[in-house]
Amino acid sequence: MTDTDTIVKEIPGSEYDWMSKNYSDTGKLFIYLALSFGLTFLWFFLTIPKGKTWDSMGIAMQSFVSLGMLFPFISHIIMRWITKEGFAMTGKDSLMLGIDLKQGKWKYYILALLLPLIYTELGNVFTLLFDRSVYDPSYYESLGIDKKTLLLFPLNAVVTGLIGSFAALGEEGGWRGYMMPKLLKIFKAHGRIPALIIGGIIWGLWHAPLTCIGHNFGTEYFGFPYFGIVKMCVCCTLMGILLTFVTAKTHSIWPAAFLHAVNNASPSVLNGYINPDKANTNMWMSGTLLSLFLTVLIVLTIWKREDKMLGKTI
Image (cartoon, rainbow, N blue to C red; front, side, top):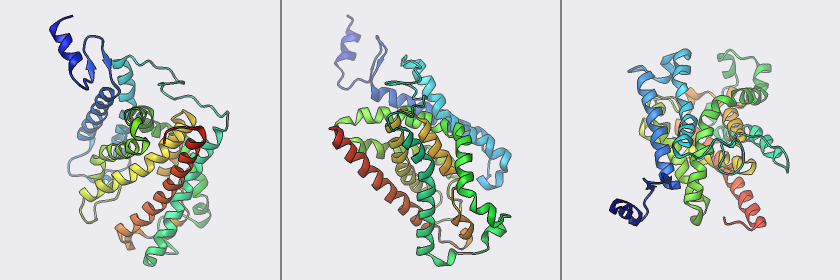
C-alpha cells in the first residue's frame, strides 16, 4: 500500500476511494447534482433567447427549452455508468421503472392520478375565499372555452397526464429515481423529514433559470425573481413529499410521473372562473400553498402511522 492509499483511507468522511472507485452515497449525490445542474443550466443558457420571457417565446421555443427537463434522468443514467450501479429495472437500488399493481400498490397509482385534482381545486376554493374580487363568472369565455369543455378539464388532465407522463419522467426519473433514495440513505439516522426538505430545496433551485424568465409565476410580482425562487423551493418541497410518498409505496417512479404530469395539466374547473388579472399574486399563492400544505400533512400522518405499524423508524 502506498502512502497515498494510506492518506486517502485515513481522511475522515472521505467520499471516494480513488483506487477501488467505491463511491459513498454522499459522493454519488454530489456528482449527480453537479451533472443535473450543469447539463440543465447549460441547456437553458444555450436555448433561452436573450431578453425573452417565457410567455414571449412562443410555443415552439417553449417546447424546445423544455427539453432541459430530461437532464435529471439523463444524469441518473450517466451516474449509473460512472459508479457501475447497474441498470436493473426493478428491485433494490434499481431504476424503479417497473409497474407492480399487486399487494395494494394499485391504490397509489389511483391516488397519484386523483390527488392533483383534489388539492388544485381545494386551493382554488381557498383563493376565492381569500379574495372574492378574482371571481369572474365569464372568464372561461375569454379563454375561448365553452362551459361543457370546462367541466371536462379534470378528466382531460388525467388523460393528458397519463400521456404526458413520459415528459415528467425526465424529472422524476432523476429526482425520485436517484436523488431522493440517496438523500434518504444519507439522513436515515435523522428520519426522512430532513431529506425531504433538502430534496425539495434542491429541486426548487434547479428551476431557477425558468423562474427567472417567468415560467412559474410570471414576472409581475414583488421581489421578482428572488421571491419566486423561494416560492418555488417551498412548492417543490411540498410536491416532493407527495411524489416521494407514492414512489416509496410502489417502488416505482411511474406514479410520481403520473402525479407530476396531472399536476402540470391544471386539473381544475374553477380555474375558468378565477381571473388572474384581478388577483393579488401572493394571495393566490396562499390558496394554492395552503391546500398543498394540508394535503402533505395528511400524507405525512398516514406515512408515519404506517411506519409505526410496520415497526420502521420515522
